Image (cartoon, rainbow, N blue to C red):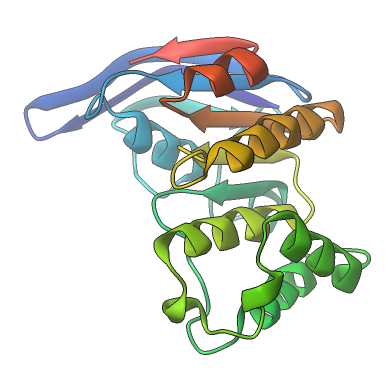
Length: 203
């Protein structure tokens, strides 16, 4: 599904990472681990084309990743940094738009299920800017799960989740793998890494 070959990235004269190489097959998960500031978020952005790398290749299905292509955008669901959202529509309308735009077969069913699963049903009619940071993070996760996906890229998906939420996340990511999704995630939660990751990449 995803192959990274000799990936290198610097900011000016400061190297972030170099010579990185790993693969993620359908139904596998790779965890990106390391100290704060090691470049985990930058790496994930390079994988989805939100940040340009200096050298190396990112291949998807054996082809160079093109973040402008409709096929790559249809394949890839990502939550990087804070969630992107439509600020002038409600939570439920935002998720309906995400599902509809990505061709979800039964969008209303998926949206209602995500609202319930992520504990957002009570705020479904609020505008995203009125949500707490934790609720906005869960909205970002819900936005990934209401759409079809073959590659799931998540930056510290456990952040701002309570103990129950982290337990849910572990089971959800294992279910994603069982459904054939390739998962790449950065995390400081060792329990999540141990439960979900098939391999780790340390920066």
